[in-house]
Length: 129
Image (cartoon, rainbow, N blue to C red; front, side, top):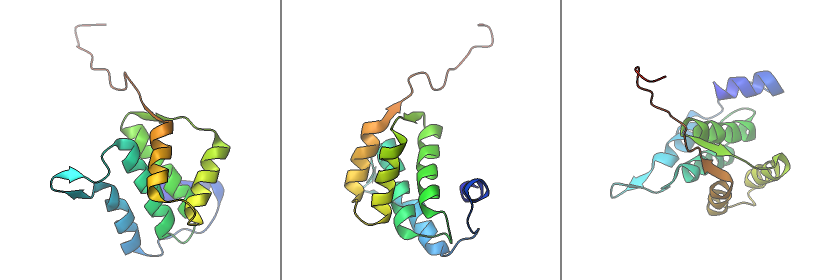
């Protein structure tokens, strides 16, 4: 769905080049050892999505776009906003794609620019308005 959106809006070829590499990238943030996630925070997991999708190149086209969009959607659905200048963000993702950025540095980048939305989910009683 994210790939389709990115290709439809920005161009390129549809399709998965390597399903196993896609699966590897998608499951990486869920990796755990001894009952604990290896990527312990939501921003760290988002960075892990971005890093591994970008590095694995599982799609025919749009890998960097899908990597970034997937990480930002993940942050959003988990109640985080990402506030970073577009040029800085572009350069960061391009550095990952060129192999010039290590995952631990990208995680620190995401930790720096991600902020938990305080009242992300408001539970309302039906009796209160």
